[in-house]
Length: 509
Image (cartoon, rainbow, N blue to C red; front, side, top):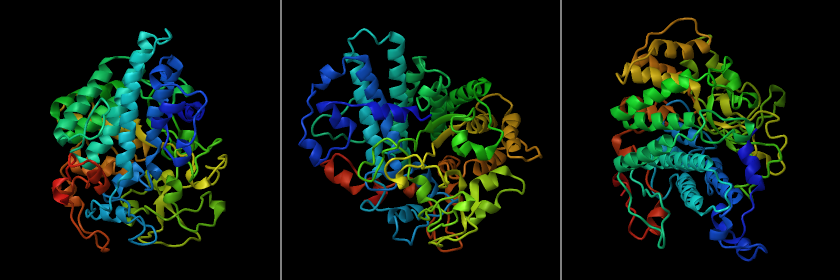
């Protein structure tokens, strides 16, 4: 389990190579490793090449505590939607979250950690792709080389997808920049075209397995993961040609017997449910021998997300939950939208009926999917806050089913949309059958993916954001979403460092 972590724990890169694999510090700059060698010599072996590939996966884990900010991608997306609040002590606690939620982020107080983490991922993918041509030990077969290339190209698109959706016009490059390390940004539509060309090229290599082959590869890019990424990007862009191809890919996943719905919805989000038949892609976190600490936040280990979103001052461990910091409480309306008997309700919304400190925007409900459960950081070796073992679920089989149903209903091809929709609906314990309409599919996604970072992007691509994301009755959100706030402001620190080559998104100047 969580094998990418185990690989990372073993990676030791000397001298120059270390500069791009770890965060620099003054202490590091004073150390001269005894086995130092230039990177163009180091990356001539297959073993060392594999280390670079593993390092390219590492930034997937960083955003929960990213460069001095809490940026868990699922929560960063969902606070801008309509199912969870921001919470915390007050409106100044993680203030940039509150500004994002109200569509009033400013360049000097906005999400910046994810920008840095995503570009770190892009750089590592670009580096590793370059190193593929340096291997001369005769051990890297043509098939393995193509598989590594495909992994890295898909992974690079995954990082760019974060940047594209949150910021729109961004610098896009597939060869790392040279001094002074600046590049004018591409328009969002150009970024889309570049991402899809890269993703199509990676898929065309036909080198990725459809699913993880054994626990040693859990967390690696697969063909099914690439297909889901393709569908996500194409559907967000509403590109009909690519959406037709996405339907073909969804059907291929549905037909593969390695994937199926987990009959117990609640178990999907527990440790025992990690990498079940429903899982298409997860970002691995572990507590076993975890060494992540506040002094080494990029060490191999767990996640802080459960601590962030659990009730503050919770003391009743007999109920199986741990103390948290009170962020991202579930809205009361979210709990109420579930029908009686829908298994997703209690698996999503935990009513903290016990002793805790009620913080800002408290409703009593917390996100059970990623809540801090007693024992889920028991085997860590450093800081318990940062080392919960909750894998982040990125793509699930239920999303493939709902993607396929939606694409058919929207006229992108043929298929049994009703069967796919009702498979998800019935798994929740609901006995009625629903018609395959776009409204019903929207509703099912709303119920299925609470807290998983899907809702905000769905509302935008459906054209529903401006009518759904409006001021609430509590006075928390006072602004209405608009196209002017579709993208976040580029962090001012990035603008300042770019020497005039990076322009602020127009509505934040």
